[in-house]
Image 1: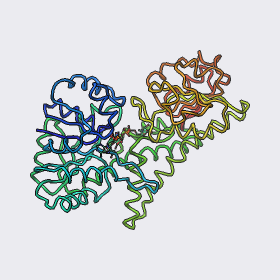
Image 2 (image 1 turned 120 degrees about the vertical axis):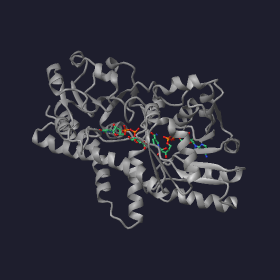
Image 3 (image 1 turned 135 degrees about the vertical axis):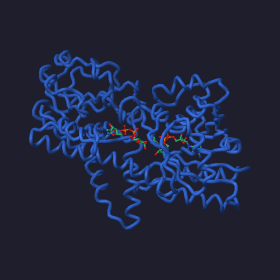
Image 4 (image 1 turned 90 degrees about the vertical axis):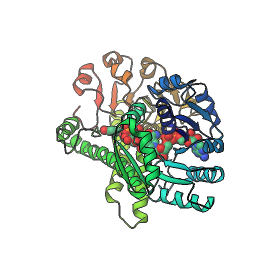
Length: 436
Ligand SMILES: NC(=O)C1=CN([C@@H]2O[C@H](COP(=O)(O)OP(=O)(O)OC[C@H]3O[C@@H](n4cnc5c(N)ncnc54)[C@H](O)[C@@H]3O)[C@@H](O)[C@H]2O)C=CC1
Ligand SMILES: O=C(O)[C@H]1O[C@H](OP(=O)(O)OP(=O)(O)OC[C@H]2O[C@@H](n3ccc(=O)[nH]c3=O)[C@H](O)[C@@H]2O)[C@H](O)[C@@H](O)[C@@H]1O
């Protein structure tokens, strides 16, 4: 099958590489020429373990092509998979401008029947709109079928998730198009949910919103645990052993980030409100997440005010929104740094994906320093904050850091360490919902 994937970001590149490895003829098309050039050289434009190796294997196989000629790519593909971004607008709505551009390009280039699969996360009603819009612009609905095909991969395990999906959702009104997509995805051996556009779109938003709800729920429990001296990690374990609850997404911390949970919760709130529904739960999920960073930062500043003279030097361990990715979008670590800047003389950042200030949101901020070793980062620091649980931070010998730091204070924003080990190491340890 000849497949064109529009958008070579996290989702598009992963999809294109995996489909090529399944012996399809794949064109990955993106307007960003820099990205296309990198991919042509066999270099991933982002960090994603395992995918880089598969890209190299596919490179030169003749199965996978990268281009910035979107029109030609559309004409060549029998199946067009759209994976362009759908970021938040200031009012929380999903910004559909990239999808609109792709729709116009398809309308201007279509030459024969195509299945158009929308993998981008789009609000309820968008696939129906796309189908009607294309029919009007092209002058016929015979040349295409639109299928909602939401994506559920996680960054950091994108390849594994794509090869082992827990479900494949296809929503639409054409059994012909759905059958073509089912045939393509059949080797992945997941259960299929075949449904209409609106249900497929809502499955995606409801899934992300539910996972975000679990996180905000446990984060609110963590605040209670703090007050009563309970241990939220044991509470989560005790809850998670009940299979009706499940143990995943119950890790308390400084809040969820990333390019999806924050924007998708906001977009679903917006959709509900437009429909006259009061999205009480979703608004609470957002509010807990918004205040979680500040809540634990306040705990740290209370300890700092009692122990260290301002302005402080703070070490920030991890800037990405989670480990094993270089994605900083909506990272709670960034919110932490923004809130700390006015109180600090220096903020030192250590993250395995960052080598220079231009890779941070503060390329010209003299107070921001990018470090390359743990010693350099912690030297004479008034406190450290662990924002991202990168594996190498698990190997830090905290006992050895005590004489290096000006004040051996650590806010563990991911409950990555054991309180008793930290106490034994001589660290003033602040965790999320754990006695310390
Ligand atoms: N990142 C993730 O883990 C997941 C993302 N999603 C959803 O998938 C969509 C894409 O997300 P990402 O891959 O993270 O986005 P991204 O921002 O990494 O990539 C989007 C790509 O689309 C390209 N693009 C924009 N307009 C274009 C056009 N007219 N023609 C061709 N290319 C164009 C951009 O240059 C960019 O490279 C979003 O709707 C997101 O919510 C869904 C599941 C997982
Ligand atoms: O739509 C999307 O883009 C994707 O969003 C998430 O994937 P992702 O954002 O890559 O990462 P997650 O592993 O879900 O983590 C999101 C955030 O929640 C935080 N988190 C996660 C789990 C947890 O227990 N506690 C917690 O604070 C993480 O630190 C991170 O900041 C979903 O897990 C994917 O299924 C979905 O496809």
